Image (cartoon, rainbow, N blue to C red):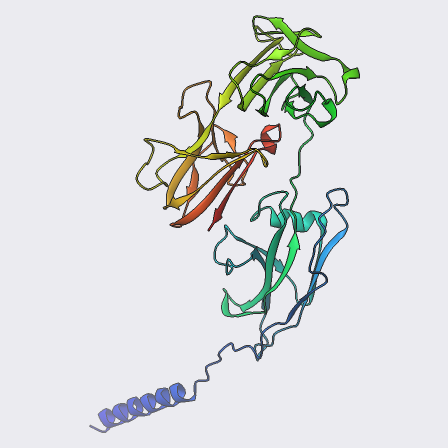
Length: 358
């Protein structure tokens, strides 16, 4: 009986001890003492592509104390103005350390082209967020704005200059078609704004380099008559295979008039059965459409057809560079989007597209 009493007494003491431990437990909460204060070196970032390593803009911000010895993470967010930093489609993030970060022209441009169109001045918003752990106890700085005009970085492919009546017969200002593999096979998209376009494929940016003209029957020849298109004003896929090419297509040329649309199950009510047409802008040489989209996939398609020679584009790397017959492009959030396709700069890695949440 005494032994039983001792056991019960020991059990009761243990319960009291456990209860006391729970009452004495100290919980620590991450509570910042203030929000960071953000300032910038300029309100107009000069993105001059000729000076990629020059400073474009510098940011400074105050530190945040969470009340204990915590590792504080800092992230600089740059976003489309009035977008409220809502999605990755309109916001880019750069992990930074406490204090300051200066962006060169090249660095800032690399971030801005993720969220903004090329060659168009825009007002950009920026703020700093801080957090501990896995984005816990997040704080935000004040929002400031600056202007910038992002530019497109082009790969200098071997090229032919398309000089003709549609642009004043000036090779130095002519659009180009490019050879990705430097194998004599050139292609690119040209907007002919003349109803009866005539042109030459010039071997350099002035006539002294020589040119290719019409050899008859779809053939090219050195010099020769003007090449002519008979299907009027439009946006054309133009190809030229010079004497460096091998096989039956050497010294040939061809053209295909194109209109562009998007197709896929990311488009409510259409799916993969029909295209939504895009609208061409002669000023920017881009195709665009604004529409509601849902989680799903889509591709860019020319002339409402999957059949050759009509091209279609996907994206194999989710990097905004469309690839010929590439993988479907994914939409993860239902919203209204503007979709822009830019095929104006010759060379496959110089093509681009943007998806911007409205």
